[in-house]
Image (cartoon, rainbow over all chains, first blue to last red; front, side, top):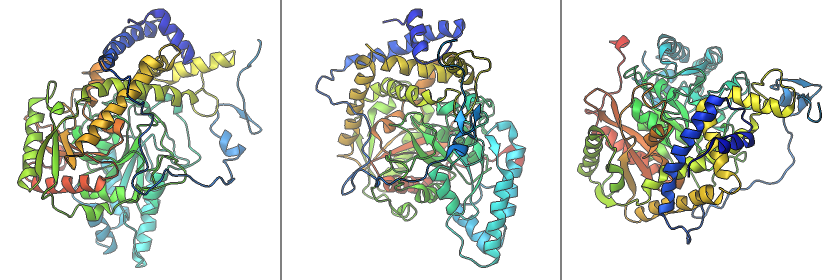
Amino acid sequence: MPVTKTDVEKIAELARLELTPEETRSFTEQLSAILGYIEKLNELDTSEVEPMSHCPTASGDAEYARRDDIVRPGLGQTLATENAPDAEAGYFKVPKVIGG
Amino acid sequence: MNLKDVTIKSLRRAIVSREISAVEVCRAALERIERRADLNAFITVTADAALERAEAIDRAADAGKELPQLAGAIIAVKDNLVMRGVRTTAGSRILFDYKPPYTATAIERLESAGAIIIGKTNLDEFAMGSSTENSAYGPVKNPWDVTRVPGGSSGGSAVAVAAGMVVAALGSDTGGSIRQPASLCGVVGLKPTYGRVSRYGLIAFGSSLDQIGPFANCVEDAAQVLTVIAGRDPMDSTSSNVATDDYIAAIEGDVRGLRVGVPREYYGEGLDAEVKEKVEAAINKLEELGAAIVDVSLPHTEYAVPVYYLIATAEASSNLARYDGVRYGFRAEEARTLREMYSRTREEGFGAEVKRRIMLGTYALSAGYYDAYYGKAQKVRSLVERDFRNAFDVCDVIATPTSPTPAFRLGEKANDPLEMYLSDIYTITANLAGVPGLSLPVGLSSSGLPVGLQLIGRHFDEATLARAAHNLELALGADFKPLRLNDEG
């Protein structure tokens, strides 16, 4: 099933990407080609197969790792906001969220 | 001094005996990095910090103190591993000025063992690519032939080792990003089992696939690094409790009776004839050394690339949602609303391949398509994993080519994403199944480009991989000579 320009615009909206018209055009073409290739998976009957969401990290006597739920110090406001493009008094500053 | 002439062990011994100082070694490394700046292997070189650490090692050696295992080892790390206070870009414009407030566990462990971190290596943006051409900091070049790619996404780390700038490097491997560049640059590259090495401080790409591992000039050095970085870390819930092995001791055994599986699916259409010949010759060598060669089948191999490009992109689209211009990195100017700020920051901050993958992943996870794409891929992933379990009933390691071709030309596949994705066809399966894989250089093509053999092992059985690879490395000694750059005579 080919991907349309409308599909690409909708996906870009979901992904918060403001694509240029040229990108919209090339992604429409490329995503169609890639998804066409991916159709190959439909050759397989997987009705009896369980999905695999992660790889095993436990084996033999070893159990899945857990750590105790203990409160520990975090980064703190100063360090946490140090890399922000805009911050003030330990808070992140962003453009207006509502209205405008 | 060429860091390709030493091993981690011999270097430490020379520093302990004061034959050479750590500062001299560090200066030599910095000089090589500078001299081959044209290869673009590094994004950031931490010369001052490295020299300071080298001085500290020399002081300890002068005082006759016991030096740790990696003392004086000059190591580079891929620039998607965070280091406190050192700019970490992930090869992206969106993190152009990010100075992390913490250090990755793998780097911390290297430093505790005496390693000298000399800088951050270039990579495909967010580790997405197979050629290291997708970096916002320019492409990396292959030192064997500068008109060719080094592979990717850990191209800078592979080149730093291949060109003798460092003794070892760390990379990350989500679909082959350590093994494929190791193969194309003629060095050893190891992707450990999923969960073997803590990923705390690795900038996430595909969280069910990502793993950190070493590049080195020989199997012994890769084993040295793995011994230091492997093991449980409370900061990463996916790091495993399974006991680690002594990987250095493990390489000493022989391969008599070792069952080496050769999966027919990895030797068909698309495999370069010369690569096939070199890989088969290496497998014959293993047989001469006493290993038993057995035919195995991994029947779902042909589905691995489509499965991977759904799962990896779906996970990436979620992981990369955090780059929104609020907490770190680049922010687009003059957006009037928060929503506009997000979209423009991401549009201007990400490169084409990253956007393409975010789009594909968002599509695969979107309402109405989730079951058909992402859900289907997870089911086929189970079948790929089952293939490996069945194969390991009759063999101990699996031997395949690492990459279907030697290094391709810069720009050759840049405009055809699908063609680029197919260069990972032999490495992706190990990430999907979570098993370890190692690439070992086994020869040169007629045009003088390295060819790599991939060995794949059972979950948490890096020891057997290292043993098989080390035996083969010794046996092939005469057939593969590491790169000598023109400038070193």
